[in-house]
Image (cartoon, rainbow, N blue to C red; front, side):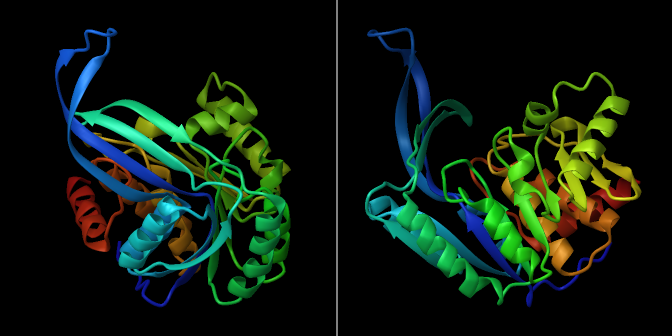
Length: 317
């Protein structure tokens, strides 16, 4: 499969951003104060997470990304801005002085996550009003819209964003959150992982039931496509008027799945914008996910890495 040139493709990403902090070290003893490991922290890093990681993945795939988000007026927001500038992401940030920027702190030892601490904050109505206004200005310049929902409040009015975007005819890719997918009605494609999917439709006891529930969900939401990522079972794409398409997961050693959904939604958005076939889009997104899960923490992939993964896969066929 030959990938298209993404360099002129413009993607608008709207959603929840966060600063992902990592404390890395080693464990040699148990605390005398409580039965917990003591981590001798040797390294501290920070990365752009959530919708910001989607935007970084898009740039990593040689396309152009604009990011519309809400943050607090604090040092974490400044750190996010710096990380995104270095990644060549064009950022439009709504600053809400009454909230704080979302942060996640992960403590790892020997590449194993021991604990994650979340510092979550919801934006106010004034910030959402400002986001709505800026959205109208940015939408016309993009080829495809990505709505990256992490449940932190930036997409509190996602229904109206989808309604406005549909008037332009641009594809709308949604990475969902929560158990109410009716909020995403009339999008082009929604991309839940398996846990998100069953939280909405209930437990599926067979492959046939899974397919029936997925097509019923896709139809009820008036989606053109529904992409369910299934961990070690790969991905399944459901479309209107067509049989489902499955692609197996890449056989690889998995180090970290955090941020893998960001990579999937970024790659599928580019595939939609450039007119790739459904089958090629699926294999492209699957190859990208197979690369990123081999990396520690919130990460991105490049076209060089994906082409290598696709070539290796074709060599085994």
